[in-house]
Image 1 (cartoon, rainbow, N blue to C red):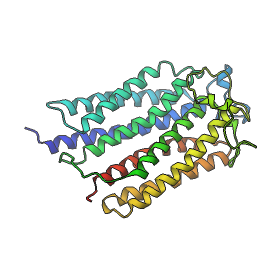
Image 2: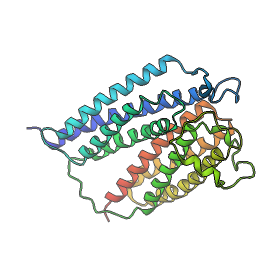
Image 3: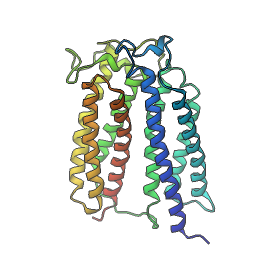
Image 4: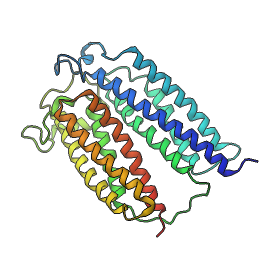
Length: 312
């Protein structure tokens, strides 16, 4: 009869493959979405959002085919992973995360039916966040299957990491809304959006993803400005909270490697955000910013797991 350790090893390998495929899905979908929105188009910036008014997508059919092939492969592996976690008997905690991963994959498959219409902000919003969720859950499954022993750690406080994960998720959601509502050009300045330093009363309505976007937000659009300001303030809060949490975790040998990686990714992500704005929304930098955000989310979660499991 197969041992628990051997079974966990097989589950871990499957989850690692799914992590790699999830990153590939995120990368290709970010390229399709951002290039289709008009980042990198000519003449810039007038071509941004032209797809909303009947303009053609700029990306090639090869990108679409690659995305579908990778996503289909990942979905198949997701079913295999969930099956491996359930038979011949359930194995936890990997099974819990594998099931959540499969549910998310199926949800994104159905959302994909409506995502071809760029006017549906909610579909783009779910797809953007869902891509990061795939990376997070697949990597969480890897971590859960990393030990042959059933985990029973003595939990340690990780308030800063908890708060930082919360603000990171909020920052990513706000960034997803900027993309879904085609609001990238509403605030091209780095430090502030013109004379506005806080969203206006009318700007808060932009937080609603269940709208039909007719045209791209223009320079100074109240909704777009609100999203940019909130995204940047949330990013600064994330930098402080995760930065402090990572620095505190350096004192724990078991968590030190994850803490170093978190701090490096945190600085890289912040730099990519700044450079994306300074470059006038470079396509390559914007894609890197999206991918790095998902990696940062996964590593922050990993560090929290390591801190909680560390001996008191």
